[in-house]
Amino acid sequence: MTSLLLLQKCEMAFQGTALSLLLMIASTSAQMAVLRYGTECPDPPVQQNFDIIRYMGKWFEYERFPNFFQVGTRCVMANYTLQENAKVKVVNAAIEKYSVDSSACPWYRDRIAVGSAEAADPAEPAKLGVRFNENAPAGKYWVIETDYDNYSVVYSCSPMSSMMQVFVETGWVLTRRKAEAPANLDEIHERLSQVGIDPSNFQLSDHESCPDWPTDD
Image (cartoon, rainbow, N blue to C red; front, top):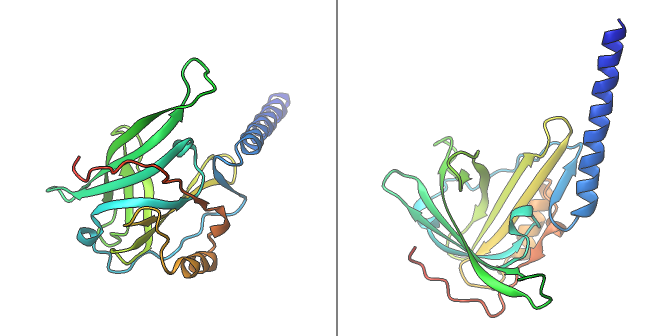
């Protein structure tokens, strides 16, 4: 009985430490990620009759939810190419700010990531999984809506911890033309609100003095 009580106390202490760590991360990275506490991820409808062929080509990031893996990047562009095996080749390009020897004067460098995407279930082709490392699990890339020629809305929500009810949300509005807002942006935001996604989390992407990324990869 004593051993059982000790084990329960240890588990409670561990959970308390884990919660404190998560809260500390959240408080120090409020602008680095969108976290959802105690509420399950929404399950929004995705683009019906999704046409993967029409979706291929170059997309520019117009606005995004802050996230850990894009910190310090701007001029973000993605190029999608359909492969013979029905997978999509993904090439993400951006400019990343960094400093040399802690210099106050920032330097910039190209940041290129090459991966692949495919639908886990052919019956839901708009729910893609993207992988940039063969040994890593695929990240969600759900196409909520798109008209293929002007804009696309992409969303993802995944658990941050298996012990706590904490989830990480990512979202993007992409456009075919750099730094050009979709004509129906207000309607897009309203539709997202209606399915439980908060559009106030979006941050406008920076495309000032960006290079003309080539379409070939």
